[in-house]
Length: 120
Image (tube, rainbow, N blue to C red; front, side, top):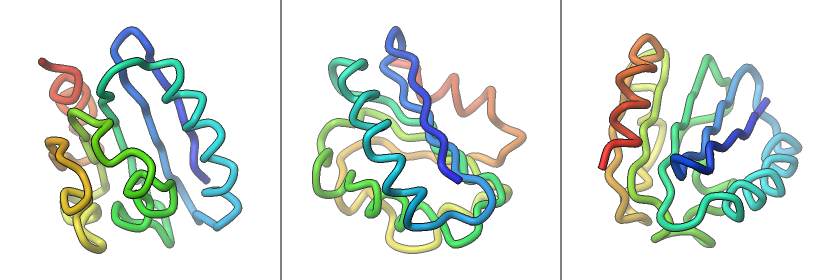
């Protein structure tokens, strides 16, 4: 499952992938992401939470949600949270297609990750 949230005042998009992630989950998430992009002007910040997501890693999520194609320069910072720091490294790091700062955190570092991603 993929859930999308946004905090327009902070220019923050929150993407949470949990459990088994299917192609339908990606397809349902794209309109929600488009809405979040419209609600958050300027370069965005993303909090990407990979919470025991099966069949999902950061590289696949990035590609399937079309960030690499549609939004390569729209992010300032991206914080990725996983059960381990290595969970986000399931493939090529999105830094290959974005100039955003990217940092990895464990799930129990949620407060630290959020503080980092919204900092100037």
